[in-house]
Length: 174
Image (cartoon, rainbow, N blue to C red; front, side, top):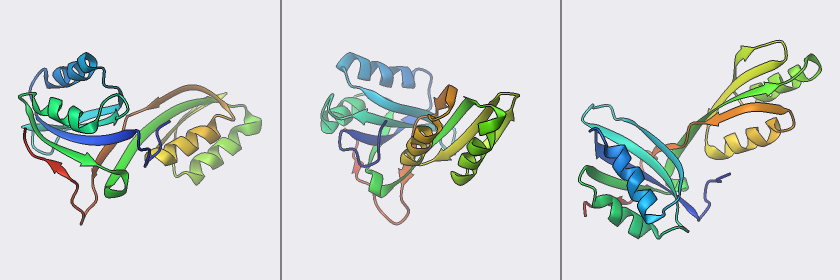
């Protein structure tokens, strides 16, 4: 599990042209160079011309400066913003299905309520729950949920933006 402030991981918000194959080229760059991607999320920005790729990278697999230089060699990369956890707002989404009998169901429901999550589906012996929040909140929730029988779990990957009122370091085009 990645914890905020973990110095071996860093978050990059990469603004790219919204064109076919851009994500594949970014992923291929990481694969060819042996860079480890911890988390990857991509979606169009409010304008359809650009997409933002949020990449959490393992900086032990390569220096951050080397990663950004290689990314800027890709034609469709417009801007890279390095987002330190203390200078950004980070969120993830988790959906989990827990096998839980009637005797423990109220405990799981209470845990979901404490973490301000939602019950998405209820079965005779299962609950499907969702939670959104910062990575450490999801890590803590997942650890407590592990006391029950998690049958399926999926996390979305991290998305992040700079905190309002603070400037994140921007890397100028290569």
